[in-house]
Length: 206
Image (tube, rainbow, N blue to C red; front, side):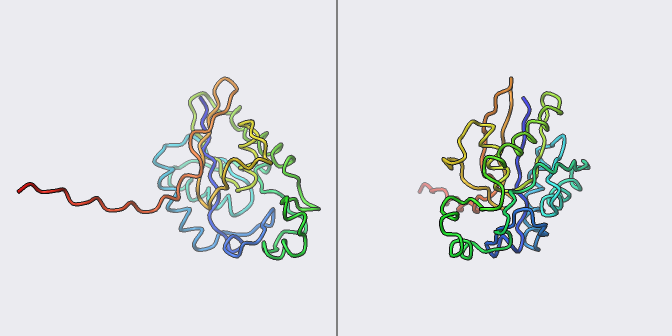
């Protein structure tokens, strides 16, 4: 089996402000760098064999933090870029809702990429990555919420419009695997667990 861990980049100022980023090259914020450093320690413990990333700076900077821990190089793949949002890029969710109410309802930027086009290119990029890896390999793929979500859904045969899979949180990841040409989802949106509650004191016998 080939396994891919799809890891979303850390937070940016646009994320915090709920702005549509698309392919605007927004860097990580201080919070995003902290998120990436924390998550990278967990991912490095899985001993990945390779790291791939979107070439947008918020993704490649996230990947670089993991690369420093593992000693692996980062291989850039432009087809992992986020969905192009056209005139929506830089707008807040509220602004999009007010100015493009019908397009907002279906979340379809009128002059941007369609969900189908994003699913096509992102899933093709993931297939190419898997094709280039030897059997038994674990690779980290760093990218963006919409592009990876749509690409993953396409590989799993899930229609994007059903929105069955929840969105990726910043610096959260999913694990998919391919065996004999078929993809399976093993984990989704990992990395956002709260601190566990303390264990109760053991009961003492009199």
